[in-house]
Each structure stands twice: as C-alpha cells, then as structure tokens.
Length: 135
Image (cartoon, rainbow, N blue to C red; front, side, top):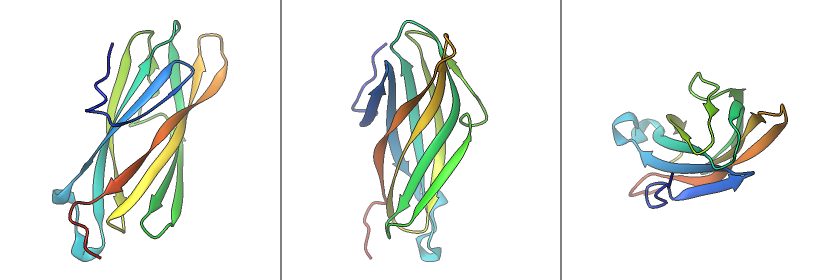
C-alpha cells in the first residue's frame, strides 16, 4: 500500500493511521457573483498498523478568507463509520462551500481500535483557493 503524495499533497500520520487529502475547486458549482465558492476534497485514510480501526466521528474547523471559523462535528464520514483493516485504506469525497474565494480546513477523526481504546487522528490543514482570485 503506497499513496502517491503528488496526488494527495496534504498528509498527516497519527498512530500508524495516515490521512491524505487532495482538493479540487469546482467552478461549475461555484457562483462568485453571488458570493459562493465550492471545493471537493478527496480523503484517503490508510491503516499502517497491525489491527483494524473504526472511524467513529469527525471534527472539522473551516476557516474562510476573512478568518471566520466554523466547527462541524458529526458521526462518521459521508454516512459511514468505516472499519479500516491493517494494510488497507478507505477513500471518500466530500465538499465545502465558502462565502470567500479562499479559506482552509483542518480537523480530526475519533477512532476506536480493536482493544476498545478511543483515540484522535489528525486531519492535515489544507488550503481552499479558487484560481484567479481577484478581490
């Protein structure tokens, strides 16, 4: 199992769990004239450990280009609480709208191991930047 970091330029590892992020600006879903910009982010969670782990919850801190922050918490990701087996990965894609053409996201996942221990896994900080920003 090897992740191409060229495809996933943002990454963090916590306790043998790698989180890799790639971001794409979606002009077809954005309306800059109406103050709306939209990005999709692709996340790959890799289990480099010896035991399965399950993703229980997510916590995001989303910051817009004006410095306004929003916290988002919830169970699982995209409606799932996946179990990631050793040597395997789990991928999902989600999206983020902002009222500014730039911003950033970071956060964490709460996971549980085979032994019942609950621990936090860091989601790397990544930028949301619309191309050709002219403010």
